[in-house]
Amino acid sequence: MSKSRNSSRLAKQIRRRTALTQSTASRLAKQVRVRLPQPIADASEPRQRRLEAHMAHVLASRFQDRQLNGALLGAQDAQTAPGHLGLTVEPTMADEVLRELLPRLDDSYGGLRGVPGLRVRPVDGGIVLQDSSGSARVFAETSDGRAWRLPTAEEGETPLWTRPLGDLSSEEHEEAEGWAGAWPTVPDAAVRDLMLSRVLRRPGLVNRASAPHGFANCYTHHSGDLVVEWCCGDTVEAYCAALLAHGFVDGLPPSETIELTSAHSARLGGHTVIVRRHSACQYDSGPSAQKITDSIEKGYSS
Image 1 (cartoon, rainbow, N blue to C red):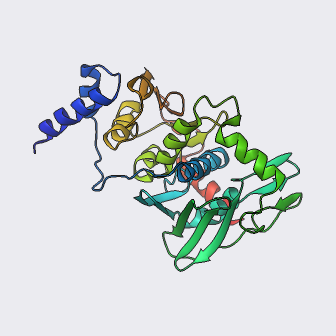
Image 2: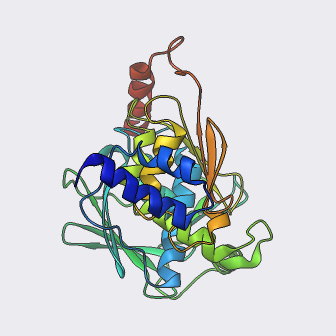
């Protein structure tokens, strides 16, 4: 099928699934530069989506602009099935990924860090990150096959991930209940879980923001959103077009799918995923991107 016919077909799909006009849908469809060969499966169970979403949220909150080799949330690739998620993690970031995900009490922070109820066990080829209160789990391996190192508690920290499966601390119970929908900052926890789970399952797409320099900026305002910012490479429209072409907003009410708020920003899934692109490169003056990368890598090795 010709490129023009592919774009026309995609434009119709975008128009049908969103509230965008036909002209905008056509413009976006023409900007898709990547098509992954296999469909990206959604997690079929709510608890699985909730675990994956919480993982994505924690990693975005903690890594911010400290990525290497374009791994925005630490992952370089994902193997997806309705009942399975396998992540291939950037090896230099791997230990920090594990440390940030595993729950612990932090006196200096004044509360719980990590994903409440998350436990870890080694398996052939990697590790399994298991939800202590159910069957949800994520397999993780490093891209170079190196072994994972379990974190050690730093001063003022109390590890909770060493507790047995099913044995959650009171702090973990409280945090898990809040994430599941008790916090007022999240109008629809199910939509939030679906969208952030899809972020974690699409590193080949979301990492386009961090590809030009090897890092970008990701962060959260509260428990209901995730922000991605970058300066070079894809425009906001091209970035969103790639996501739309791979089912990122499928199944949502059209009014909640995507809002192009300006030439440099957009919202997807209501206000769940926010993408922003600076109008100019942030590294034309001052420290070069390579010097920043060297500094990031040094931070992981220290």
